[in-house]
Image 1 (spheres, rainbow, N blue to C red):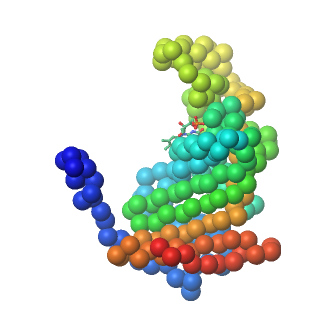
Image 2 (cartoon, rainbow, N blue to C red):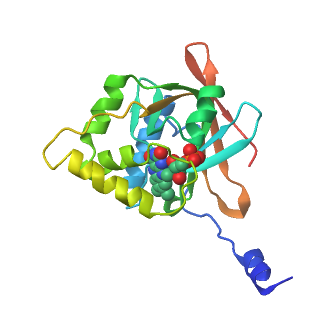
Length: 218
Ligand SMILES: Cc1cc2nc3c(=O)[nH]c(=O)nc-3n(C[C@H](O)[C@H](O)[C@H](O)COP(=O)(O)O)c2cc1C
C-alpha cells in the first residue's frame, strides 16, 4: 500500500456529539430540518446551505455537484441554476433528484429524495433580483453553463460587454434560461453520527397526507 493509502486507511473520526431518538425528533420533517439548520447556523458551519445534488440522465447516467439551498417553502426544497446545464438537462428528462447535506461540525447528514419541478417565473425573478448585480450579470455570462469553452478570456470579455450593457443602477433582467427548481421530497433521512459506527438514522416517508417515521440500521 502507498503512503497515501495508508494515511487514508488511518483517517477516521469517532462521532460522539449526541444522538437522535424517536422521542426527540419532530413529527414534522420540515420542522426538524429547520431545527437542524438553525443549529448548524448557530454552530458557525461554513455555507450550511451547501448541498450535493444528484441527478441522472434519461439513460441513467448519474451526476452530482454542489448547489445552495435557497428556500424551504410549501414542503419543497429549492435551489437556482441554469436550465441548460447538465443538471438542467437531466432534470428535464428525469425529474427526480437526491440532495445530501453534511454538517461535519455537528456530525450530521440529511438525505432527501424527491420529484423536481421548476419554480414559477415570479419566484425565480424575485430571487434573481435579490442577488448582487455581479451575480446577475454572471448568470448571463454563463448562458451556456457546462458547455466546453476554449479559454477564460472568452467569458471575461463577455462579462465586460454585459457590464457596459447593464451599468450600475440599471435593471438586469431574469435570463430565460435561468431559474429555480424545487424538490418535493418523498424520503427525508436524518443521520446523527454515534460512537462505534452505530449511528442514528431516522427516516420520514409519506403515509397518506402524513409522514411515517422509521429507523434504519446504521
Ligand atoms: C459551494 C458551492 C455552491 C454552488 N452553488 C451553486 C448553485 O446554487 N447553483 C448552481 O447552478 N451552481 C452552483 N455551484 C456550481 C455547481 O457545483 C456546478 O459546477 C454547476 O452548477 C454546473 O453543474 P452541472 O454541469 O452538473 O449542471 C456551486 C458550487 C459550489 C462549490
